[in-house]
Image (cartoon, rainbow, N blue to C red):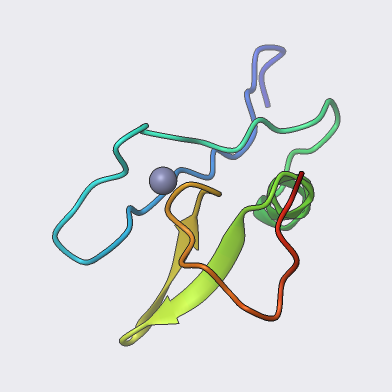
Length: 75
Ligand SMILES: [Zn+2]
């Protein structure tokens, strides 16, 4: 444990298998968010989603998240 720990970084996996995130986005974790679970919770507040892609899960930033008709558009 160091005093300069940045915790976990959740980075966007990109819109599809062969593409990297155009924005190289990563979740901006709130102060005190140290675990992946906490950081993902922060990301969800900003519109991040976690999806299954084949056998693994990917994290997607708002701009890479496919439009979901069940989710209301954000202002
Ligand atoms: Zn992205």
